[in-house]
Image 1: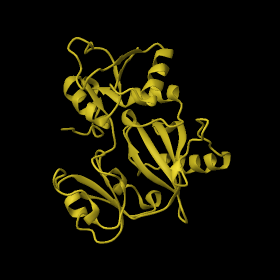
Image 2: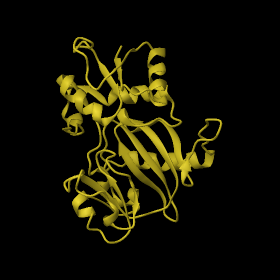
Image 3: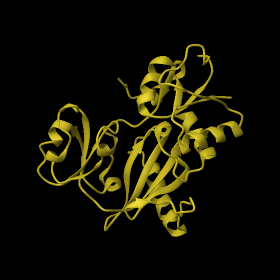
Image 4: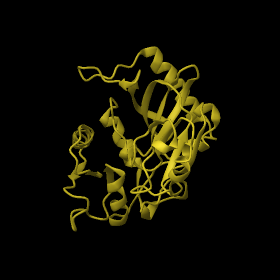
Length: 264
């Protein structure tokens, strides 16, 4: 059985994943700092990680585990019929020179707020964020609803809406309502995308899709499964996706190696 390695942060998601892992007999270890204590983990055992990218960078140095994730240019390189809007990968320095409204977000972490800026002049200045910071710039659009799908080997393992009409899609009683007709449409779009071999994806990934007003279903973005929130997704169904997203470096095949992003 694998050992689940968890972030030091006690989030609702990390607790849900821990409970699910324990229910199927996995060993679990929650870190109490940003380093793996010597002797805590047998380097020969299978490690499954769930936590923040900052912690992932530390683990990449400390453990013989490769973490799969989409590259920074994944969304801009997606076929246009799945994006339904213009998206480009640039630098924060170039984004600061934009003079028209644009949706701007950091490509690799959450070092500044992802939102529509009236111009690049509203972005954080070079201190403390350097011009070289990878940045995504997109055409502003209006999203009616957004869904998260945990995908394993190009098949949806579990899904949940997370944003609806400009607010979190969770009701006061903690539910994440999924209208049947909307779910059917969403799965049809996602399954078409996953069947399209022009769309390159890691074997395990969190894929976000939604409805753009007056344009239809489109991809929001794709993220590392091991660092993505659950919302209303089934924690138990998420475990195999997390397991596939964490590969021992000694057995890393070429088809997986292309999805290992170097982290400083």
